[in-house]
Length: 203
Image (tube, rainbow, N blue to C red; front, side, top):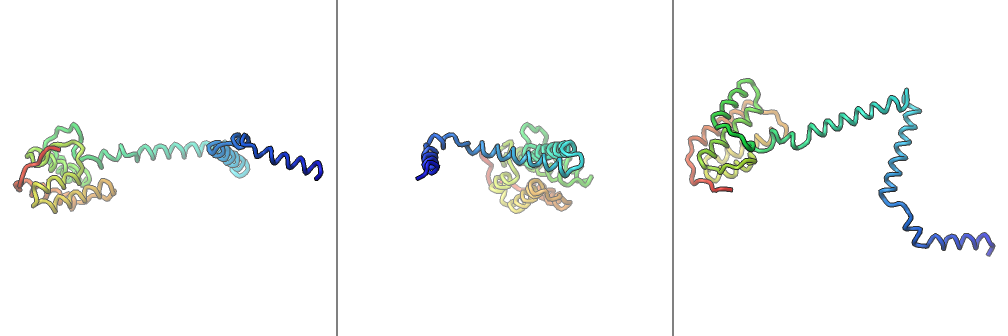
């Protein structure tokens, strides 16, 4: 064996020492290095192919990042729940008639989404005032339909249909129509004329 071969063999044995494995970069270090390499590639590409180079591409990327952040903030769940969450907001003190009047105003203006929301709030407040369902801030349309149907079986189909319409409009982004408002208006009238088979218990 030549001196060169012997040196190579000794080097391989030395590299098998566990201490060398411990000194290898971890996964996060490798990912960071990879990201930095890609960023450098992007910078070089901008310098070579974009008129004005990075000085032009940089502000564009910053603008796109700001637009993305604005979109995320706008679509965050906390914003969507202003319409899509509870039927009655915590702390709301309006009466059923107040909500009916608001629904009528929205419907007259062709604003059927807010009309549906206010109409369902009127139904919820009326059922709470009549002790058919227990007052509970945060109740959803689906929960209202399930709870009220137990005491007012005559309104079961209408309650289920109203909850589906509300959820489709609120969660599914389906445009509300005059038919949706009419559905809620008819349900409100039916439930007011119905007597409960039993009163609700507290949650």
